[in-house]
Length: 453
Figure 1 (cartoon, rainbow, N blue to C red):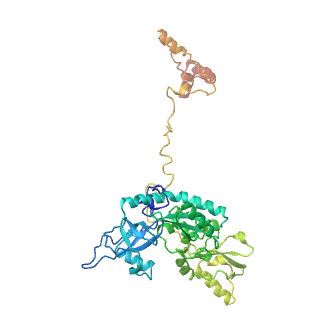
Figure 2 (figure 1 turned 45 degrees about the vertical axis):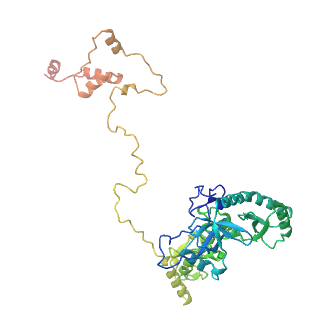
Figure 3 (figure 1 turned 180 degrees about the horizontal axis):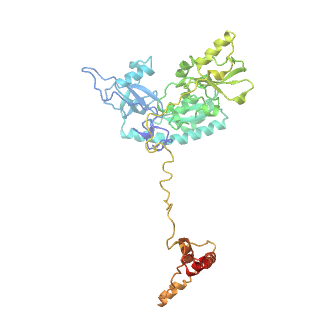
């Protein structure tokens, strides 16, 4: 498969930059997968002699293999043209080509089809590559000539014939263009036979290719071959906002994908009542706002009371209210017809909070020592961050280092346990309590016994 046979340039697609491995099977447009390639023909049946050949971008045509050449998909062949010959790549052979002929060419006559001359030689391929390299400069010069002649046309693509005898220019225009003088100027300058072909905006996007708003390659470049008309009614059926910037594709027209699900929406909307009918209740009249086809809900709001919010109703309920209005009855309010939606709980149990999004928040936090008193040697090293550290050693430590081991003994005071603990601490308030307790008369002493006598 030759990547030089497209307008992407350099053998690399402009969209995905994946060197010819796009979703379309390559940088060539409208790639076809031969799903009958591994199936052999029944005995005594001759292979179908019509072959589909692909040229630059999405241009394809059917040719007759009159010489019985052994051709496979991807072979470069020289084919017959009106004047001279051209080179193309074989895309479909065999029975799949028969199916494509019935699908695309209803009045196709095999005996009148153009012929395949031969498999391309190296000289033919070199000349073909040279023709492709001349096309960008040729297109720029032709655009300059059209602007000079003030022609309201846009030349979007140019295709050289492989034998360098003819150049075909593809252009888009809103109306009829008189390009006779342009053809004379181009023929005198380029020294080739000139052919002009007008195409539409969709065909232009199909030839040039690109990436759509969905992030995929354009449908018209990959698989879409017929361009059906797309109207704004397709967007109304699908409850889409009529925003031209979002609904238009790269061609400037409505997106072709608006027609993909249109039939399904039309069938689903048949079971819905008409949205133009107002619902009359004792509370007031309500009119339709929007419809959710997949949830089968119609949203209504009261006239002059938009602040109360939208009221969702099933199509069956809306039809019931309409029948009541036709009979001359009015329901009290629309809220009586609202069906409460039941949310189904999952049929599995939550194992260790597996579906919780915050289950990993506490797993990386450092564990703190909770409930343990900090009475270790590091407790005395805590200080105020604004206080300067004092590196002078305590007196007891200095005596131990100097060799004086006579340490002062702790004072033992007779009394309660709390008093002994206070005596050891040596604070000023505890000293007053200790002195008061020493002056208190103690039981079982001689002085107390004398006073009792």
